[in-house]
Image (tube, rainbow, N blue to C red; front, side, top):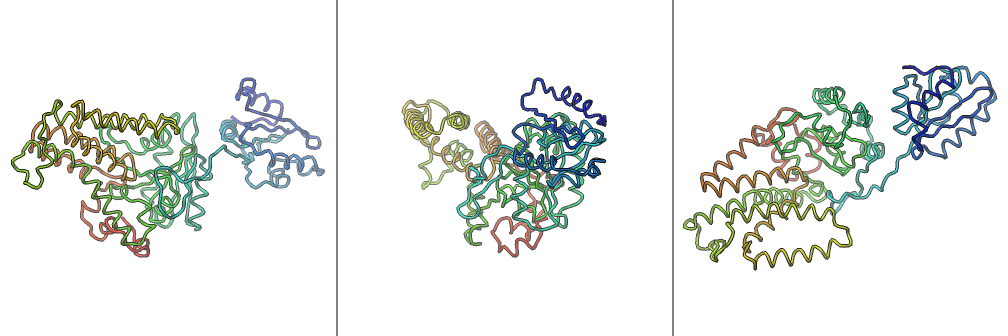
Length: 473
């Protein structure tokens, strides 16, 4: 549906469609520019008052009637603000208006002028709580798409950096930006992603980035392993883009989606590159070692307690010598759930109460749980280590995926002994090998299929020059 050349008809249409009598924040104002009537529609809180004041001052000073012949001449000659456009489709005008742009209509014009003088309420670009670094930049993404794009532009000053804009959702019209290096990205993958996003038949991105990931990846619900990497750091995002990856920014989300990603990409962290190669390699290898121990510590302990005869003498201290009221397997399963319960409780605890409540919880839950006979000290110790080890991983998604398999491994080991343990390990390996990335490669690439040149760059922190001049895949 097109706009009318009659300004009164346009005002009436906008008032009816936007329910101006019910929405207090939809503001419109009518002014006279020489002998023509002009009307502004905008959302209160999105428009910049200073820019609007300066533009209106300029409009009142117009003396040449020739400048008001058509929308194109008027926009080029009378509007000094740079970000403007012309549109005659009413649906697109409504979306632009509700996105924060100013819609200006003049009597007799067959197109409206869109003035992008919007500003969004936002917090500061402080360092994210999860992706902290010892050294390096301490800024992070916020919930405003334009500012997040600027943080990346600040780091990549190349004309090859492209940020393609899309609008997703028939109702929400959420702004999405696909960021990539035009001379490095896989054009096949890029076209595939763009096509999936353009054809997404969704009303809104209710869960923001997770909804977008589910649009891109039609994975089975029972596969917990993440296929994309989330990061709230602009420097990490810029580094991934420079390596040929694709970053997707979603408005109202303070993190970027990086793809394609294997399990090795999910294990990388910014701290690896803010230290010398030897220190960075040590941090990365330590992270892999801690991950391995976190998966197998409690299942191996359950297995050894079932076969005390095979435990060497120097390792006898891990065996349970006192009487226990609750089976060890049930203790560990209860602790797995209890730890998640405490984490959820901490999210809803006010900051001023977090520290004292943590101390109380440690004393009561730790001490009295052992004294009551519900839990053994060893079970609490090993589960505490596993819990802390999960926080050494950069992403929550991978940590929970491995947690689910650790619980499965605990159950089959406790039920079937060594054969259950072997079957559980084989099942985990089969799932990882059969899992595919967005590009169709194995989730364990470059381990499966084996490629030592790429694998060593994932395992060891290489020299920056060598790391950036060679593509990872």
